[in-house]
Length: 337
Image (tube, rainbow, N blue to C red; front, side, top):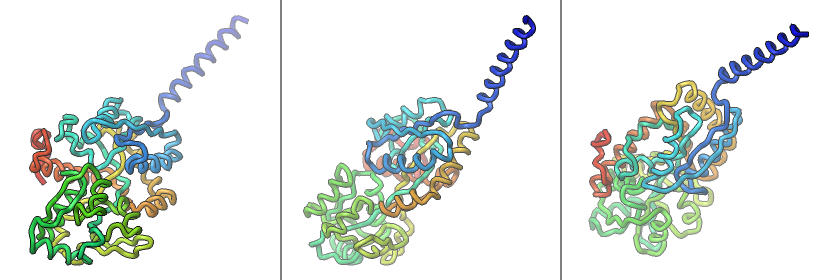
């Protein structure tokens, strides 16, 4: 009887040890993952992350919970929250190209390469005009701007935004000068164009498409190398067709996706990359992108880093030159573009 009891206890101990070893050896992920989106619920970055995380979850074998942590400067509250968690791959950060300015605007004290980024994609920018203006083509607009520099008012969200940088690129590549009027976001910029406060607006196609179909704005050109087909409108031509010199400065594209701390375990990052690649290939992601006028990217690793390095350099130094940055980019190790 005593021997049976000893054997029974020994068996329990062995089972416990075996279970512990199995749990310790279980590959990432062994529990649910949390994605902290730095922008508000329902916005482009939030929607994009909810779509991709839902598609990644089956390949990861765990749930991916998406939460929102907004506020601060350029999404600094959400980024700081995500970065403060253990760098083990279980906390991701949903972000976009706009977050690269957090450092130079005093939101936090890090260069953006503390993250390893995953780019889902973004909606390309389009340059449009108020319908009652005389500009029927991009050439009409540019030639008018050349004849009377700084006379044509143009909106492109706030100073230093991706839309503003695209407007600046049009000016450089086509040799024109507009009178830039900053607004607090894309919607106010588009409203200004619709009401005639400004004649020109540069925002994303995703943001403009309903206004274009409703005749409230007139598209002159996509700020990417290719034309873009829009349901109900046909093809919007590439601005590069009329002004090939734009290729020296464009495209400057949105980069919406998520990130994991760069010093997270390589094995965890490899699993995330694999799940991301498989999710990007699903019909649901492709259909969502098509319906919302997004161009899918799928870049990770060195390719994604190169994109964000360029965006950070461009955005940071533009803000500094405009007097809109509080920290000189060089102090954060950000090189000039």
